Image 1 (tube, rainbow, N blue to C red):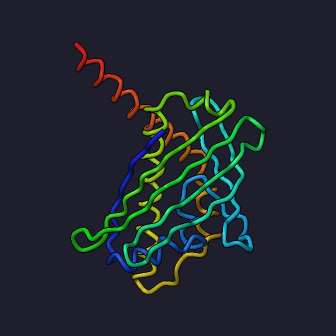
Image 2 (cartoon, rainbow, N blue to C red):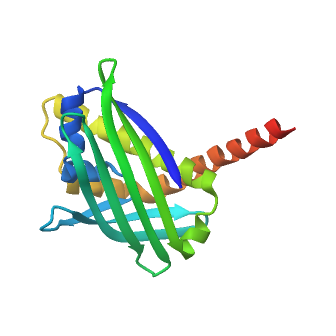
Length: 198
């Protein structure tokens, strides 16, 4: 399954690159994600909680940045994880590129997602997953902008554990709201296709 997302930040490309390659700093901005540790090979262990349809899943796995090129500001992020209840696996390879945009930067994400086991059955609604992906990226961008604004104002960058704690405190309401918006986006897509077919 191929997914494409993008978002803007009010920082020049070189600075945006340094920030986005700092996994411990940005991990707390990712909805449902928790950074657990760093391996000797430079990969990161963590978990990701997500809801697909009526099922709440929690993946445990690894994330690694490869092919990072500071000159072209491109990189690949490889993530692999297994549901903690044994319901399947998920893998994603995301191509990241950062380009100038106005007074800041545009971050472009192109993801190839693979699901297996029962998880693949939960995720058969491609439109739902695409909508959920867009919502997660939008929430990540919002949290990242808030964190950048805080550090730009002179305050120290928020610690990953502080961001994670705030995210956990908001998780129940946020999760339902995100799922509802994803469902509406998916429904609008289906309605639009049906109307176009008439």
